[in-house]
Length: 343
Image (cartoon, rainbow, N blue to C red; front, side, top):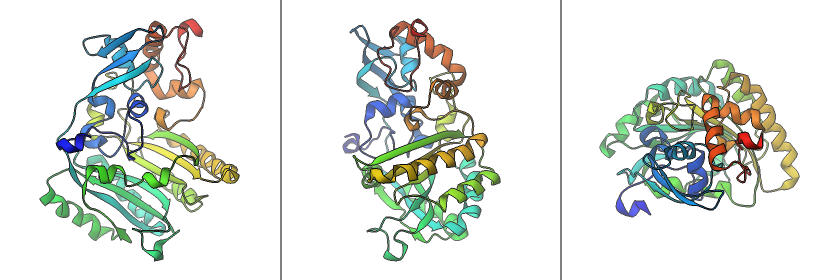
């Protein structure tokens, strides 16, 4: 809707993601490096509490609740409306570049250094994938396992080609679909790959460093993608998002470079064991090299210890807010923060 007015609110990488869930968990996506997380652009919210009251949460009203809503998930009430700050961005230079898996070690070593110092106008998440067997992908790449970066450049359009020329020269892609796009086209580009009704299994971690050891592990599992839709994404969460104080919102991993998610996906329940085992093994191999916690919107039911690790030093403060606003833990079907009164 904001596109009609030449603006956007940063949110996710697919158009079907609900605003409530993604915002309350943090809200990372294509515009995180430029505009921050969704929660960094939230100005106020109307919330129905466990006792039935409707309250406003903002920096001026119920500030403790407002702090907790920004990353604490659906633990504190039912949000009936959000007010966001928007950004004057309507067209971007964006899309995927794909390379052979044999190029992945060198590409990933370059990418880990590039994204740490790239200007905020440049973002790109790294992905392992099996190329879908249809347009716009050429037939000779169909069902091939590849490595890719999905780019998003928000700077001056006349500078776009020059910004990406060194990348194309140093690492010529096997497929290059990067070009000028309206923001809704970028946001909906991958909708068909995450259709409703599919089987999903997710494992996630925050990542500070992409070591050579981690790259070797990634390649091992990328070569063994268990189903055509299974994948791994490394989303950069530095840039603008990193310049928010770690205690300013419930999201505490402001010093991480990436949010990693390993996704086992398939339409057929018969393949559940195959992609679930792959995702668990992949995560267990990499977790010792991660930052500890994970983005709550990428987590399954993983227990209280994982929730505590995800919020770190912000967890006690979240427990206090939970105890104040939901002492009986009515809102518990989530990455649950247990109130003192229910502990």
